[in-house]
Amino acid sequence: MRKIHPIVRASLVLLLAIMSLSSSANGLHGKAASSTHVLLIASERHSTNSRVVLPRYSEETIRLDFNSFRKNPILKSRSVPPLHPLTKQQFLDSIKAVAKPNGLLCYVHGSFLSPEQAKRDAAALAATFGLPVVVFDWHAVKFDYLRNQVEVERSEDNFVDFMSEIERAAGATNVTFVAFSKGCYLLNRALLRRTEIVRNQEKFHKIILISADIDALTFAAQANKTLPNASETTILVNSCDAALVGAYKVNGRQERAGAAKHTLDTLCESVPQNTTDIIDISRSCRLIGRRFKHEIPYDILAAIKDPHSLELSKFRLVRDDKKNNLQFLVLK
Image (cartoon, rainbow, N blue to C red; front, side, top):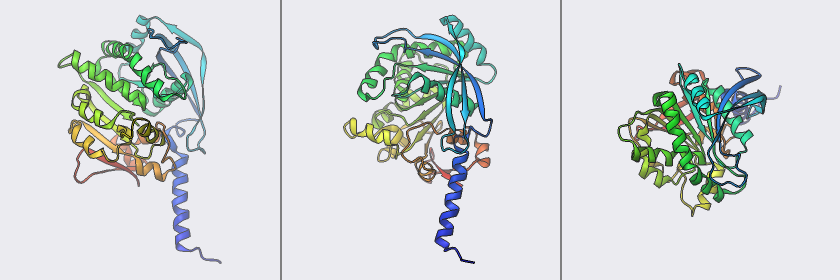
């Protein structure tokens, strides 16, 4: 029998480990071949000319189908008719009802996403966290980065009002904000305004920022005003994220907070030390074949949402020796 060279053997073992991890990617497919989630949506997309409009409210059921043999197990998502339009008061009453007893997630999507893609991601977050999800669907457009910067600024007033209404209906301590990419920029601007308008306000339960497309130094300078709006903050950083590398170039070669590399030390020093965790997921994304992906890492979110779940997952957190609020997510 032919012997396998040790290097080849080690490579095969690593490949099998990665394939095994990929089969459980995003922590979703193990629950069921499909799942159904009800979303509450505040959308600005009914305006065809992108003018500033008040959101329209609805309740929509989204069905997710999974495939355990793909890196991204979500094969497709589809709306389950009928879509239920809601008045603003019905929308807020629904939020009040679903927020009990475990709270809710408020999702703010990134650039370039269609309404269908935003709803798919929101439903996947509901599957990951096991919580009801409210979506703020701002008027993102495809293939125009600079235009989306303008759209965020146009949506800011609506989102600040939306945040206040959510807080009144559900109670701040029951609300977790999850923002992705350019949605982090919108959330950050709203948190800054909330700090300036209301002093000694009740804190939100948690803020989770994923691949934040915000100037890293501006975010660091504002962190002591924005992040104290929540009892806890988690910031996921991937310095290899291809979309944020592109945003770095478009923005005069200024690093983005969600891909901080040279400015990572500044971020660690600037954020509130006792309530903020910065988790560098660059190494893990590289090893599981998602080094350059600009997407919500559901498997990683599932691993870090509960410290005890790390023992049952493929990941573990390693805290930096010098910076207490910086952790690295690595494969076990």
